Image (tube, rainbow, N blue to C red; front, side, top):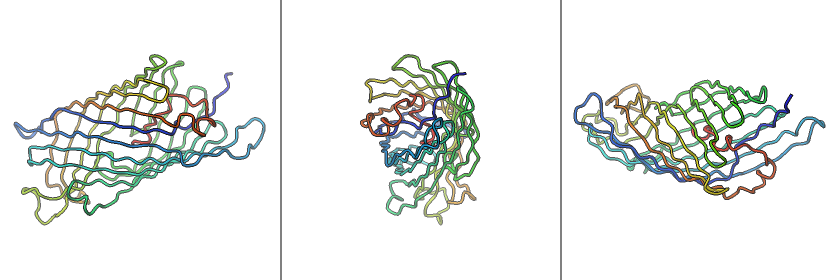
Length: 314
């Protein structure tokens, strides 16, 4: 029987710049209408603390703990014809993540996030929102792991608590299927030493506070909440330009898209539109200046397919 490898967290130190571009979509209930949302994001992931604890016996690796911080900010422009609005949306966030590995086969992951979701007017008086994700992963065999946990997130266009359940299946030496429902299903394969292909399906959504300058909305509501929800089916190609520099090209199809303007609790909806299917092009450059950091010296066998964990983008 092949020896099972110790589970590893993603490699940490990185700086990234990404942009999302999309042609206008149509509001399905309004003729000659349009909706468009494009943006730019900048962020980094920094190792904060890494340690290995005392080894329990000669056959079991010592438990280890890794903590990272992940600050980022995104800047988006929305253009919509009904109501006729163009706004700038700003979404800074700060994430604290910890990975605790123990007994060779198990990992416990916790992700805590503070975020601001504002427009150019409400940014003067921001209101923080909070999200979290916790996940337990256990490797059953060399090619199969299962996951279980819970999360509170705004990825469905509202603050929602939901359970997590999934598995990772290894297909040969180069390919994996990774499922953590309802957040993502991904097939990933290494096409060459530098080129990786991923096919994924995941929810796509979010919220932003939106100053009420809409004449068709309730004038007594000073601030509305702009909600977006839908699904994204994409194919991403990641190419390693250098040992510590990669570029990602990610075209995707946007389906089942809906936008709403509501009050803060979501109990009253002022504007509600379904969108036609859309196309989005996502480009990202990732630089890992800390490739030879203490964390990488402690975990030299970390697998490339575990580097860019979707857990950071829940």
